[in-house]
Amino acid sequence: MEKAFRRRRRYLIRKGFQLKYVGLILGVMFLGAAISGYTIYHNAWLLLGEKLANVYPQGRLMHIFHSVNIRLALNL
Image (cartoon, rainbow, N blue to C red):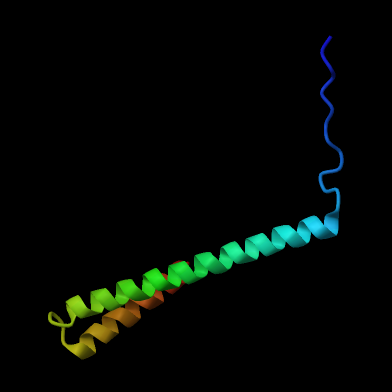
């Protein structure tokens, strides 16, 4: 004879401990993602700036970077 399926009624056994632990894990994950994203973003712009410095005059290149940064920030 099969046992009846019992739905779980208490999802959190020790709320304080479990929520604190989940918050800590999510915080560390967010911090790691933010640091990785910034590192990739910064290095990509440095590499792109070095490549484009020979093509565009310096004043025009900074204007292009500034406008691209504003568009990226607005699209987030």
